[in-house]
View (tube, rainbow, N blue to C red):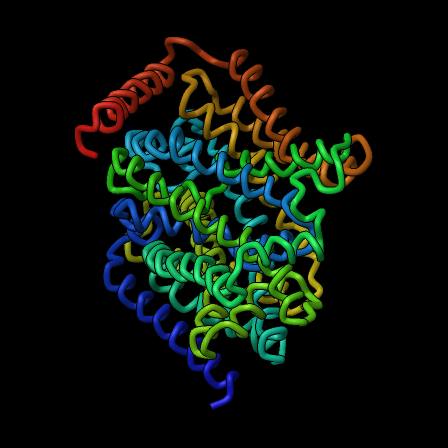
Length: 508
């Protein structure tokens, strides 16, 4: 059989496995909370790997190795920033958010938690937060579908639209009916695939060359500047670039598709085990991606091969170093990275549409069964809109990926931290902070980037949000009111749970 045939068989096996997991998840989905949050039943390993897989997307297996291959270690600052941000997110946010969301009227989405936490009876905070999620994730989902179509086009020489629709269709199939559990368990398997691919490819490359010194010499000969952490030399521009890369870690605190995994843990104490598993997965995966990019420099030179597109470094090496069927599984791992993010974002978008917007209209007149089907309808609506946008292979939404990360981080990150660790956050303060943070990130990214302002927009957005939220909350906080007494009680109850489960390890 030709290598292409093996690739196709591997992809068919992968797609079949994802759909089978979706069917399994469908059988376990009994009500609306199951569909949106998996009934808060995730084991630590599933929560950890699903969070990592839904976070990293194709950037981990294509973008980062390609950047290291083309530019060098200066790109690794981004990986360092993400690692620090992810660790702090698991350490401080995960256990407290898991406990607080259940204490605060069993909130099952980020917008509903912010509303319940601040006692926003006007529902303005929840609706605005839902709209922010809905708009940006629809575009984010579309960018993933575009990436899937281009992957098929470059890897198999196939038609872009057919590839995009195939990726969209399979992802939609297991997400539509399996809901949160379908997305999460497929993410878990996809996380294992990504992990294996990122470790195996650089190891095989080292074995094929046979000598570490030859690898180091090859990199030094071809691209010596790629081994410099500061690029061609330290400068003001380099410092800003490094700070911008490190600042990506701030985005973790406000990414709904990641922190919803914290909310779905079985209990707050599980966050400790999940943190160890998740950070182990992340650190080793990032190391594999970095090594793939750097070793690839020497490997291609030694083998006399050309690499027109640096982002395909891992794919080309896999196809040359592995049996075609195994290489096909590596290609499937790339798709896994793309699809895991799409599925997670579809569920969060659906929850924003149904739980945070539509349910406020229907109130309590809708049954649990009807809510599940409304959730599925929400997934379908968001997917269809994303597909229509993605029909244009040159869709500008791809440019919004970095902005969406900054936008979510600036809009939600500071509010999540304030809501968990500061008792006096008010609904008005939260609304002002969220809008100001998102607006600052957007204006900075669109109009002020470049020159002395060439700083990643999440930094000013992440600073403006808590500043205004604090000032406005201090001005609008009503100490001793009925709402304030309820908030104080919930805050103290959450603190007790954290002490019992995490600090004392009673149920870890």
